[in-house]
Image (cartoon, rainbow, N blue to C red; front, side, top):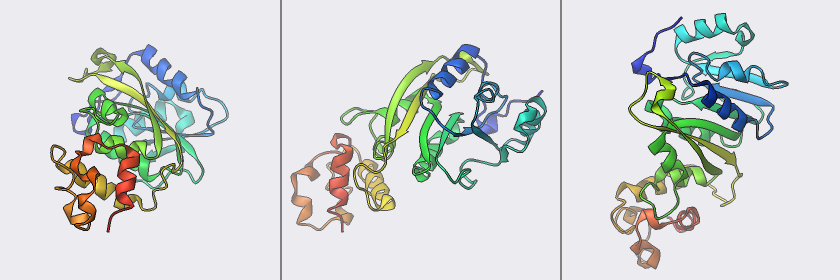
Length: 250
């Protein structure tokens, strides 16, 4: 078998009904190529292998789990990418879908990776710590709304699908989990420079309790900082508001 490694944030899904539910949600949208992130003990993998007529790959960093998966699921041989999703190159040249019970210690970094690959990733079904899932899907004005919300929703429709109880995992994490879906929208806000947009959003939420003219002062001319929008706080702005700010930056 295999061992659990806390250093990799491993909590393996053991509830078959949750695995089946996640795969059912995945299949609600047609796809031709699929990447599973962190398959671990194969709780989702064994169902994903039964989906017909798709090109399927998994990415796993733990050599012990790779050996286990290769032995347990011979059909995976030649389709396992050894490494971290944060470091491997984009696994497909064409559009693909991502699924995973994501390690909570790198889950926000995985979101940024999906955004980086956005023109390729058309759908993502992911399990996150519930609080992180709520932040990704949050609306302006809520306490959960922040950097992850804005940067994700600039390119994806985000949907919180359902909760997952701690007891669905081995070992049980100390937090509840949530499954969410990303659906790629393209570039509906016409963002020309993503890196500049990301820099703006991170600066705005760096002092989220203060009026925007404080954290954003270095990026705008003094005359522009007199606009009414700079009297608001970051959490009050929609994605469109942030794009409007982007277009006024130096």
